[in-house]
Structures are given as C-alpha cells and as structure tokens.
Image 1: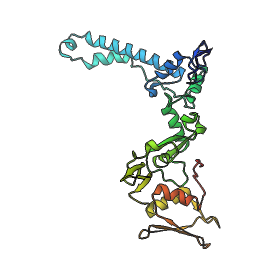
Image 2: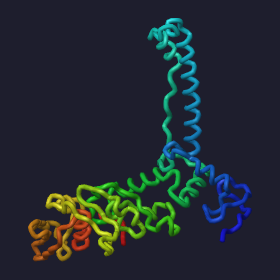
Image 3: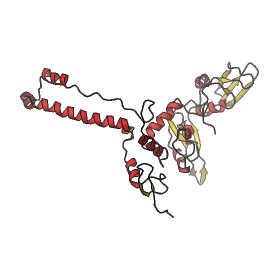
Image 4: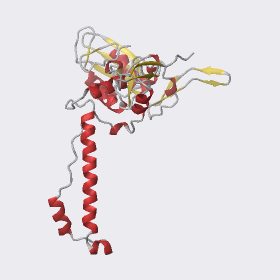
Length: 302
C-alpha cells in the first residue's frame, strides 16, 4: 500500500513541502521534476560554470545580431549578398567575437563547487535510476580503472560497461566505491543481467539466453567462435606480468596446443600447468587464478 506524502524539509530547495515518499528521500515533487528535466546531460554544468556559459551565450547572440545589422546596412549585401571583406573585418577588429570560456564539469579538479552543487551531487548519487550526470560519473570510473575490465587477466577486448556492485534495484547508489569497470562479457555474467544475454554479438563469441528447444530447456551459455591465440596470451602475460606461484619467477614459458585446445605453462622450477584453450576473456582470468599477477591487478573481487 502506498504511503501518504509527508510534509518535510526538501533536501534540494530547503522548503517544507510534500515529499514524494520512497523516491529520492526528502525531495519534493517540484525539485524532482526540475532535476528530471535536465536534458541533455552533457550540457549540464556546476553552478558557476553554468553562469559563465549563460553569460557567454547571451553575449554571443548579441554579437551575432550586431554583426548581422552591419551586413544588412550595406546596399550591395542586401541586393546581391556581397559584402566587402574590408568593411566587415574592420567592424570585427573593433568588436572581436566573444571567446568561448572554459567550462568545468562536476568532477573536474579545477571546478569550484557551490553548496548547491554538492546538494545536487548528493541527489544524483542517490538517483533511483541512472542520474542526469551519469555520463560524467561513468567517465570518472573508466578513468580511475584505466579503461580496462577489472577482472584480473581479462584483456578487455570489447565494449566496457560501468557495473553497480550492489544493483540499483537492491538499493545500490552511484557512489564511486559501488561502481566498477567490466567488459561486456563479464558484465553479462553478473547476477541480474540476464537481459544482456542474447544481445551480445562479436566476432569471437555470443552469449545465448536460455530457451526451449524441442521441449527441452537449454540453459544460458557462451558460444565460442574464436579461441585465445598464443599472441593474445603473451600480451595478457605482458600486461599482468604473471609470476610462478612457487618460485615467483617471471620468466614463464607459454605454449599453445591448438590441436588439443590446450594451454601449457611451465617454469624452470618444474612447475607446470595445463588448462583448456577458451576465449581470451575466460582463459586470462583462469590463468590469473593459477599464477601471481605482479602488476595491473584488477580490483573486482567476487
């Protein structure tokens, strides 16, 4: 049963109004509608940058109007659309075109955030779906994670997603500590992401959603189209600098027996490991679980 709206102090405007219960905490309907109307998100800036942008837009429009008046003031321009360059250049030299200002985004280190900006960020971090500044939040996470899937051993070959560790539907927020970069393959394998199954199409694999075939249920599975190559394996090793789990030696020998679809890894200490030749997104993390990655270890822990 729906709860009745209560009169409380709105987090955003500070006024006592009816609060939409269960949506964004103590936020009134008018503020929620205001924040929801911010489109497109890439044009939304902190308060000070927004004032600078509005001032620039007004100045530029006024400059264009005056420039057009100068053009219309010449008979030959009105008649033939021809304007002597010298006359227009002379006016522009006296009235230079306004320079576009540097606009700071919310997470720009040089941005000066006001109390209002911090309130907006608080609201956006608690947004019940993807917030209007999701593009900025996503870019910050990708930059922090060096634009790589944070599953150790994954080569991050395909489109990168920003994943909520605690899902939005389970109360997860958009704070950076709850966000992690995953490749499309590993993101689709996370619980609650079954809607991605069947939609991924790459030259190397597809992920098939569960379906009925001849009365029998086929569970979701990966259709492997091209398995990892020795060159890809060596590149993964170069990035993570795997060490032997027994002697910490970094000079490991990697071999590929494609006829048997096997990967073979050996060390001078007589350590040896054999595993299946799978997708790069599968073999890399599997090897990372056997060897010791000495650099660029991913931050996503199951």
